[in-house]
Image (tube, rainbow over all chains, first blue to last red; front, top):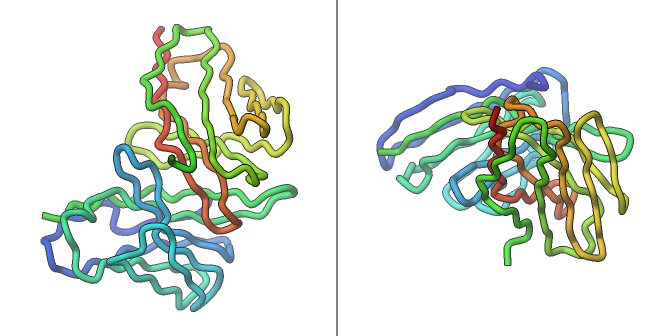
Length: 114
Length: 110
């Protein structure tokens, strides 16, 4: 699991409520990512971070915000949850190897928005 | 056209056979290619990467790349029931934006 934990692992919430998902890593990796995974779409990048307080948008960032105040924590916030944000959310870190940067994933958070 | 395309499957092979999983990509400038395996209800696990045209072998897995055809494949030799999973192909747009295919579901029947 590359030293990545996500919390909560499961959450049920109601439309219109804010939701924050947490990703925690133990190995001081610089790059962290938030993806969502939906049937037929695969994994899609929401936001990523390249350092403390340094973040950028991904492919499907609308309705989401992120924060990274410490190297080890990357938070994803759904400002006002909608049913279309029901999904499985994965956090990932990037590990630099000899030839490439490889992404490793956390265990995921299943979110249901009613 | 999706940036990374895979047949969704399911692909079913008998135990001991070779499973062949295919992926095409649209960005001709792509330089590196990744394969991940995802068991049902679990997170994706990196299997292997390939950067140069040709084959790259790692145990029972062989990745094949043909940049002229914009095609990358993963072969699994001596398939086992434990190989039953969804296999994801991924191609970076840049260092920070990995594009994933929707995955091919593989079933290996005993």
